Length: 465
Image 1: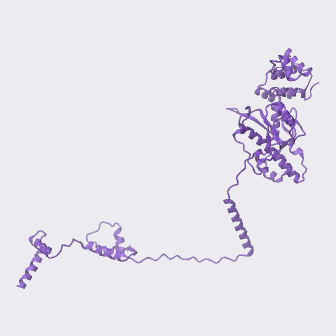
Image 2: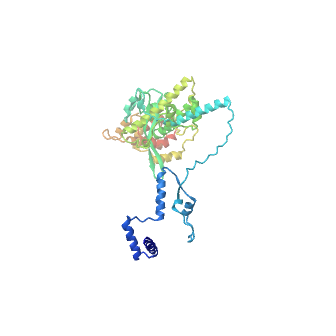
């Protein structure tokens, strides 16, 4: 009986294996197994092997896994595999591998340094000290520049600005040399003609107590006037107003006479005022800016213009005083002829330069608005001869001549009176006159010198007897 049951069981199991999935035997077997045990989830051999491998991974913390040779080969893209190609198991793909030791660095064999002598050691120490000093100097911030200002000096100079001749004459008596001299004029920029300088609009003179504008001291040969490129300023004064500046001290020439280090470091004949201030006023900066080419003919000047003009003339004086002090410390006897010059009478050109030709003077006269009557020399008129007689024979002042030629309430223009006298002298070559007196008359009117300068410079410096 038992044997019969066993046969039936084996027969049904074999039949179950060989029957298709939907056969009654399959359903009977599955239903019987379901009744005897709990259903198990489906798991393939591949997943089972992967789960087992993951358990091994979790059990070894901080382990390093490497791809095996077969895994590395499987990562490459091989050509299409044939059906007979062997399959690799998942267990062979992830395999815990040992930690690789760091690569060995081959040590280079170096020769021992040669022995150093005491002299070489001292030289190396000096070089190290110099390198440290230079590195510290490079790290230090640059020195801040101090802007030059006349207000930094004690006592602070008093700045006096005047446009009145009488007041300027009174202030002249207060000045004591040596003096600083500077000038300002308006520069006009014309399209196609470049830049052109107009007549001098401001003249600055200063001593230690103050700064003023004057004329008489400029022509006084006993008073020193110092500045940068000062001879050029003197020539312009002569061309504009007929003023003969004397005892003009060029700062760069004075520095070469006193300071040998200045001669070695500055090769140009004329050195700018800003550079002279840097060298002899504690490296201060003399600011220029746009005010330099501003409108110096404005009346009155603004505060910025006054400050600029005061700093320019005061800094020139401070440089000169510093150089004179250096010469005194060295007990050096200065040769004034090497740094002093003057504008000679009737010669606008400096030493070694050609005086302007008559044609050039005529051109300058035309450009500056000269009267064509100077060249035409018309015959003397009654009004011209009367103006000449009042000036030369009766020795009347300009205001008296103006009133006599018209009325006291409505006098003749000063420029017209000066032109009448010049035209009379041009028309009659026998009329006597004194050239210094004539120049003094012409200089009384600001535009007359530029208008008649060409003819005056051609005459005898003494005039006519």
